[in-house]
Length: 173
Figure 1 (cartoon, one colour):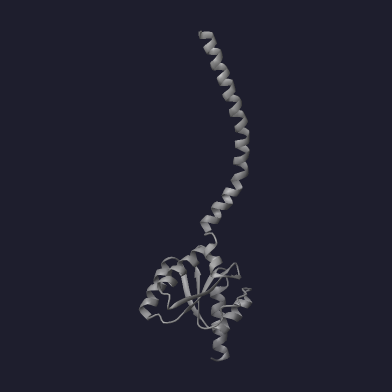
Figure 2: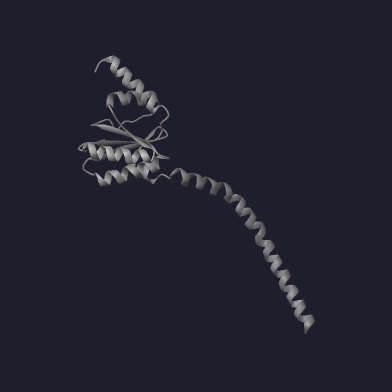
């Protein structure tokens, strides 16, 4: 490959991956064209893309983008990115890898530009789960405060009510 072609390929990879911070790296070999096309179409419907990359060029591009990947540059490499979060992406890739275990091997994952193991990516919360946790944490102090204020007040109100009922019974008798 000439230097000009390598530079064009690197420029294309730079444009493609400049805003991508979450991805899964795979090794895919032995898929026939029909199955490969079906997998790509199914993933594209979910907003996930696949691209085969040349290891030496991709390593240079990712290093330039500040994404340090050290363990995935042996053998053929396919980069999967997209979806709503690295957890969603990892779960989709895991289901495909289980169906095609002889042809697809997961090499690792990247989240927010940091290399992590694929097992860690599977355990991470999805975007919706993370937003729910943040909202829960934000509302938790307020709900505790309300329960602490209402707890003693309801006790006092219950005591006043029972005293009123006792007086009503004493007056009726």
